[in-house]
Length: 370
Image 1 (tube, rainbow, N blue to C red):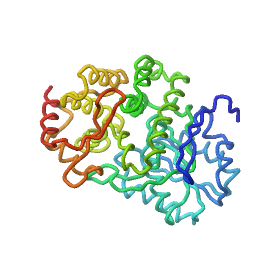
Image 2: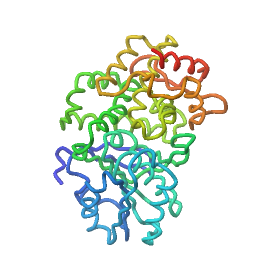
Image 3: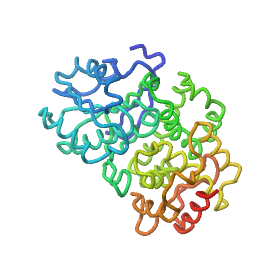
Image 4: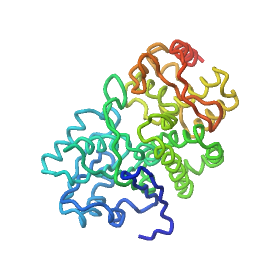
């Protein structure tokens, strides 16, 4: 492998440390996996969209290292992030007689990564796995940091585990086949890193959004690397979200409520998070903590990525109070309170623990009719 343009981002978690490899032409190169432990078998977990594009190529890359390489294909979409789909992975592992050294390879977007990781954390009380994310959202966010989960009808990602991969292989070439809508959804998680941690990165995005949307290789490489660097720094300090890591949830409390209110699968996760970030910025301004200009700036970057920045009055069949009800099932609920990630300025995020949910409902009603 020519490593001249290979980017490496380290995740420092003591004995659970690993690295993220970023470059084109990575996922189907056997050298990408040469340092992984030996095993008799490997299981590729993919879905009906990604599998036909890439599963056979990954299987060939792994076949020289693992005597048996099996594949399980899951239905595609957030609506299938369920126990039923999870059991398809367990059925494959048990059906092929996979042992506790078997390595799972999550080949797909965030849903595949979350489910494969949760299956790896659970099968025989834990087997190793590797993230091979094929969407921008997964490369910059969900494949990094060890969060794994499935959804429950009452709440998103409510059943899961912290479980770190052995490695993350971000092949930028897989972004060439990503639908435009999925690319924009991934940019939501990229944009997030500006308001919470890096004002300069937000400025870079403002200046280079057209290049990102055009999939210019240099722009995508910078986006993935810088996003992973910020997340790696946060996860290295707070693996299990006891403090600092909460800033990575910017926009997600609003976003998860929107997803639940619409029904999982109606909007892509990144679209809901994008709107959630715009709402969080405007709510920060409502509390006189963020300037209206900065709230408008955040919304402007979101809109430039082709993402929703305002609540549509016809898309939601629920009012502010019902959206708040969905928030009560958020896994960050602490008794009767729900922490909100808000902004004091671009690059300065904090957890607010004094938020009145009735005020959130009133704010959302105003947004619905603005």
